[in-house]
Length: 258
Image 1 (cartoon, rainbow, N blue to C red):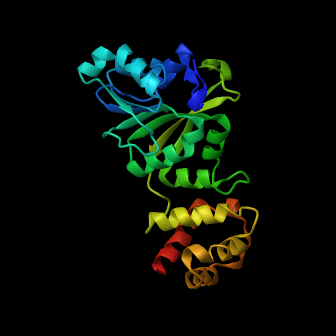
Image 2: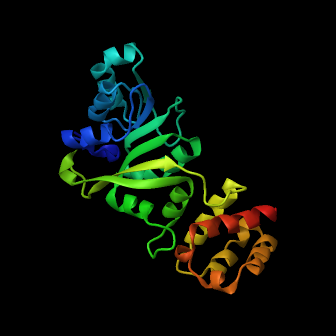
C-alpha cells in the first residue's frame, strides 16, 4: 500500500467494526471520504447504507470500481473521483470517514457548512485532542472554538499506528460530531469566522491587542467601537481564556456595526 497523498489505510477489522456500528446507517446515504482499499466501504454497505465514496487517487478509484462493480451497478455505491475539500458532493445524511490528516481542517469546516445529521470521523490524535478541548482552557484553539460552536464532539476510539497500512507515525482518534445550535445565535457566520481567525492569529496577545491588529479586516471604526463596548477584564484576557459565547457576542457586535 502507498503512503502518498497522505494515505494510511485502516486495516484492523475490530476497528472497522466499531466505526461501522457507531451510528445506525441502514437505509441512509453515508458519505465516506478517502475510502482507500474499501474495507470500511464494505462494512457500511453490509449494514445497509448507500455509500457515497469520494477518492482523490485515480488509481484507487479504478481499483474500487473493479472491487465494487456489482454495488455500483445497482446504485448502492456512488464513487466520486475528486478532492473532498472542493468537489461537488451528492446529497448525504451521515458522514463516516477516515479523513486524510493534511486536509482534516478544511474538510471538517466544509462538512459543518454543508450540514449533516451525525458524523463519525477519524483524525490524527493531536488534531482530535485540540478539537475536543473546551473553550477557556490553555490549549483552546481556533479549531476548538469553530467546531464546538456548531457541533457537539465526543471521542469514541483511539487507534495505534499498527491499525493502519502503512502505519502512520502517530496515533489516531475517532470522534462523533453532532450538529448543535451555537450558544448564542450568530448574525453573520463569515464575520464570526473572521473574528475567531483574527483572535487566534495572535493568541499570545490580549484580546485588546488582537482586536487592534484586526483593523484591516473589519475597519478601524468598528474595531474601536467593539473595544469600547467590552469590559477591561475581557480585554485583558487571551483568546483561549474566553468562554465560547463571548466569541459570538463580539462577532454580533461587529456585524451590527456594518
